[in-house]
Amino acid sequence: MSRIIAGVAGGNPLVSVPGTATRPTTDRVKEALFSRLESLAVIDGFRVLDLYAGSGSLGIESASRGARSVDLVEFDAKASDVCQRNADLVNQVVGGKRVSVHRSKVESFLERAGEADLWDLVFLDPPYPLDEVALSAVLAKLAPHLDEAAVVVVERSSRSPEPVWPESLECFADKKYGETKLWFAEPS
Image 1 (cartoon, helix red, strand yellow):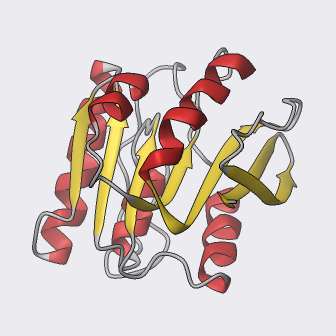
Image 2: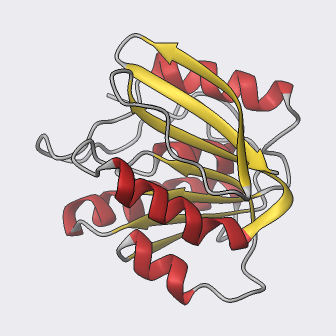
């Protein structure tokens, strides 16, 4: 069972998506990821976008740790319902609507986003079957919606190649945790 690790909602359990269609980020990887983000002074007061959100655990963790707003984007109906339940939990703890859930395909969500829709921190944990060409296309659609000091985190199988970054994004770090690999990028 996954949980919120730290912040105002720390210790609360998260609802998991039933079945095997999603790959939850393990608490070990989540702890390491957020430790890295906090060392970069990323999260507190940030606008966060969690694409392919699954249960929404990365966005929910961000809200618990002080993110200003969090958008969870998930197309699967069961996963979207779980996102909403987890969002309701953290929204109740923080005393306001900090987390919003969008049942949408990631590509459609980014195409509908306006010029003023900018995010400071973005998580992408796409399903493994999403090929590298499709992931690159999503990164290209995301790039215009990033604040100039934004951080983008891509989570994939450690056997996956490094994402093909659009010209406007540059990878500045990566880290492997068993079967999971994280890539960190920023606007170039």
